[in-house]
Image (cartoon, rainbow, N blue to C red; front, side):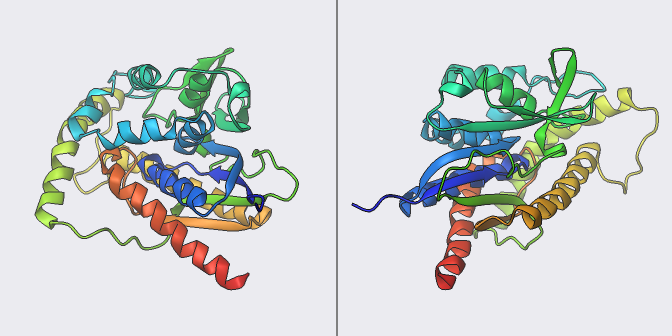
Length: 297
């Protein structure tokens, strides 16, 4: 029996689009590859951790059953200039679903990236509590409150290293595969009733936008004009732009064997209720890039 080809897999940051990582992992396994190590930032760290501990299917089933109200109820809103979501409630729910464990005891080597915003440096979690690492790596600036640890504030790893190719543990003969969910490419959304999709998006956004407006009014003295971007849109688009530029630079530097690109236009940061679409999108993105690779080899 031929030995399976080993993959060092790197998963980028990018909010709910990161559910596409699940589809990519599924296709890698279906094609007979062995993921021997994994590293990720933000949502990439979340998906990577659940794969590394053998619980990705459990997480997938959970996220596929989330509707808009479920998701909204997982947000513990607060009034703070550091973030309007605490993040504790979400991770308590996840820990009830999948127990915490030590990173060094996972099935394969795993690394999660966070940003020490005080000292302006990267923090790499390769040991200790899995959930502490994920909580730090997913703290979107001004949206989810930073994690306080050892006297510093840790925020989203995507701020400093959205595609941590230099942090995945390599083994002899492996291939470096990266999944970029911030690609500046067009996105072909699956066909569905346009009016139905519009109602879905509007119903979900109403509650969140209502709270954000109240929070922003207290946190800032100036008010944006009606034509300007909303506060969360402005933050998320700014972060997406930074991640996009950093990711392109790192891909050029590290020259991975395969880059799987997924459009940053697929969905916004918190649209996790689009899980089915994002997972299938990840599978499709893999197939598109994998066919290119097979034609060259």
